[in-house]
Length: 310
Image: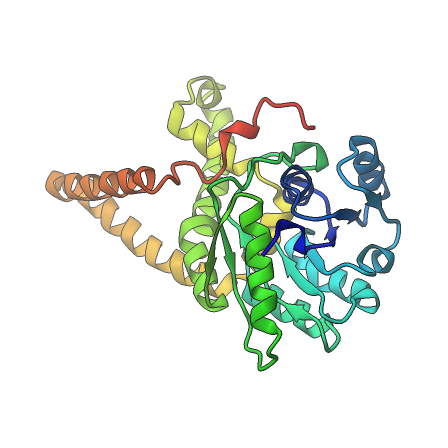
């Protein structure tokens, strides 16, 4: 399948991920025409100034009219309403997808908004930085990263073709593609992404509370581990608010298990059980080495930082 298979790409929402999709699609020739719509007039003007799209629409229906691929890159809770706002413009045979990190609730919302004859294929590129806004995007963001697609049940013979076209699009952007059940995706991401962010937000908040007690020393003497937490905790607060509310069942399940493990760790420290601590640290060190061996040592690529957006 040729890269030019996507004639008109519409990106709805143009923050870090949406702008990176635009830049990557242009750099790789993955779409012949790229059109952007964002609910914010200010963002639309910034996108025009940056020149990352062939068209910037001031109306959501106009943005998706004639598009054979529509990617929603709005905050997770806004994707359903955005799909409803665009629905009149979806052409028959169009592929409707997204970039949100919750697939069950968002997939249901897009499917509810989509008219018959279009193909809803929820997606999630596992890539990002703590930066946000259209200036933050860069074409290399998806290189070597995983994009998970969560096909929905369908008896339409054209649906597998739509999944294949969307897979080819993401591969053209440099991503590796995996197909996964939406519920399984949400549980996996609760472990690998959502819980770590929740911990980061909490520990940085705790440190901020302690800052006054320590007379500034918490921030002044921050070691590498805490700096990593602050980087994660600098992520888009609106997006992460939506993620936790939309994926609350999986997050609460994993959080419960984490709390139990944390209590066991606390007991080991209290009772001086060094063997248990060393066994845990040895196991987790091996996991870290496995992440590096798999080429996923950073879920948030460094090469976009300290770089002027194109």
